[in-house]
Length: 404
Length: 198
Image 1 (spheres, each protein chain N blue to C red):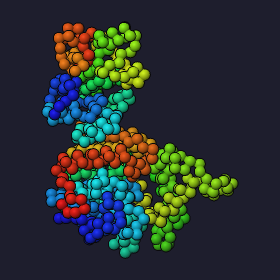
Image 2 (cartoon, rainbow over the protein chains, first blue to last red):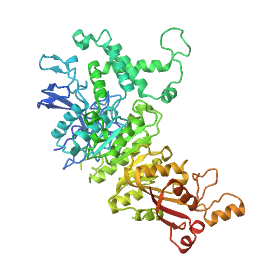
Image 3 (cartoon, chains in turn cyan, purple):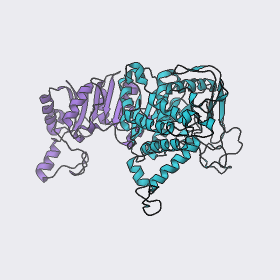
Image 4 (cartoon, rainbow over the protein chains, first blue to last red):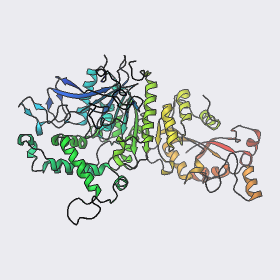
């Protein structure tokens, strides 16, 4: 069984004028599942679909597969371009491609949009078969555990019995951890980046502000905004603005904006004066047109509810004692949303459980955002780890740009 | 696999199948050796990014952690042995580090240079300046070695703290055992390897 996302495009990235280390033009695929999925909330999804993108080629013994789990606002489009008109590649293009740290010459890389998302997988914008109308606020609340169950079914469908690595940053790292607990025999490595074993009260508080901003927007209509041909634009903007502040460090904001003025002088009005305000407005505006409000509420709840130790008397080491994979954890020094201390909690629990774990604290000024950026030490360490994985699993690299 | 001579001395004292913590594990050569030859499991602590990457490359478990910030994140008796080569004299509080090592591990193996070696004594007494040599190549102001001691100093500390010295080997700067360092260790020995416990 072979999956090659670039198979239907004859031209190489170079011929298309794309960077040579790009995965090139890619086409998402939809996987439909008819086996009912029992969710943590007690409800069941009878049918659902997952939007998936893959890069590279699955080898004969299906030993070279990497799953990339996305964070709060991510999706299946991890790398490459959907069309030559795309202004930007996938969200982690800097890390995924031929010769890049997640090397598609060696690995078969799978990205998906999680359940409850708004990028093609079943979620609030999908049609509810019971009513013939979009689910809207009726889409069940899904958890990290539910996502991992759905991802395991996707692995079955792709013919992957055991992932070489499950990788994720932030909320994605939580999925990698959950994988190691729920399906210990189905992954060889978990790479958990800028993540946490559960959210802190401060983190939940930020999420609640975001949710309140959305649900108190007059255009929210209890989540049935689609029926009113509207959407809570202002609420989504506010939610994203709060989020963005927490993703950047104080230092990064000072570096990026300082107190620079938008029009060169103070306006003495309650309008935008400083560049940082303008930036937040822009980010909020962009996000509000691209993300569904109900999906955003769901994603923040999945974050809040994640707490694998809760089923083990709040003993994280006991929860992780089931794991059989090797772990690589990384954090960033100025990340205060998912601080290095939170990663160290996971590391300490893994040490108590006697698991194979390595941990690096990357010196980076960018805050939580750092996990998405091509910071040299971060990228080099990831590459070194994955090269080691490839050699441990006897993965033979494909010939550059061709089939193995 | 060729192991650095001081690490070669340490590895001889590590029992097979044990769980170890290597403080300041460098490029992970010792842990790699112990894993392959003695089925030893464990972790190295390191702060140098290049060394951390070398450990990851070898498949050695390495944790980025500053020894000066202590070992409070490890529970009592997590390890059979705690190893530390040539780092004791670089710590802010070597005494506290020693106590912590004996809390998280049952036994410790420690190596450090002997400041009481005759060449150091001669340098200080004769020239009146801090010794600089091929073996200790730093000036007083840029040296990472901020807490030098002699073998006698270390043994005094162990006595005061109720720490038992189980074994000691004294060698020269090439890590060779010779008659001189056995005869007058605190004067003629350059490096000591101690195995200690509570």
